[in-house]
Length: 284
Ligand SMILES: [Zn+2]
Image 1 (cartoon, rainbow, N blue to C red):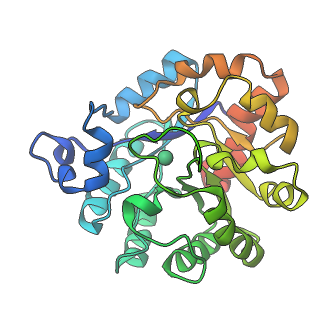
Image 2: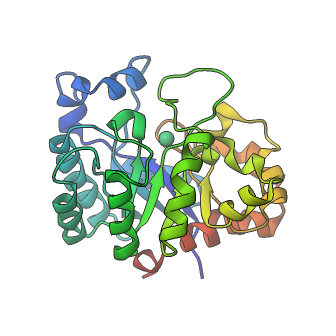
């Protein structure tokens, strides 16, 4: 029986994010937290899950550029997951643009982490290019049978801190060769893939989207309440995963977006699709 899952929660270790902590050296972190910083511990994620009637969450850190910060954060995510009694599934963060990510990935596997996310090209400074270091990381993840969460954003509409430029047009150039070469790659595009599924009336886009998952993170800030039913109508079942972006938004904030969905679609979004994306490592 698949469990009700939130696939998108961020944890930043207290020692990195305190007023004088090294997180504030990272320009992307600074921009995103300037207007008001919200951070969560593993226990706070579990409390949010309880409030929303969810069983578990995939948790990951912040997409820092510096490998040293990422390693400290991976240690913290692993500790929080380990002590959560199965409520939290820890994902690793590495930076494919910086040397040493291969060793860190292997270290994270020994720590008990189960995948990689949420990678962010703008924040971390890597190219959305299958020929470069990101392509090498995708090959490793396919071999390891690890899922990946990648940040995506809308090419139109309002600007906001953290939006970045991982737009559907740029993702297309990465995804066509990557999914062609790596049939085992399990990739979830955050934030509804920057709207990529909304082009799903184009047959080649629909075909590509059948190989991907899309999460709902930050939806209440971005789309009107009918968007999930519309995407479900275009793509069919099984591609949407519930993700809250907690602590930016609590899982409860998504009720308006979830209310209109038929029961089977809601079940898939909160349980079946997350389980399929997370894969065997998260099934036990
Ligand atoms: Zn994101």
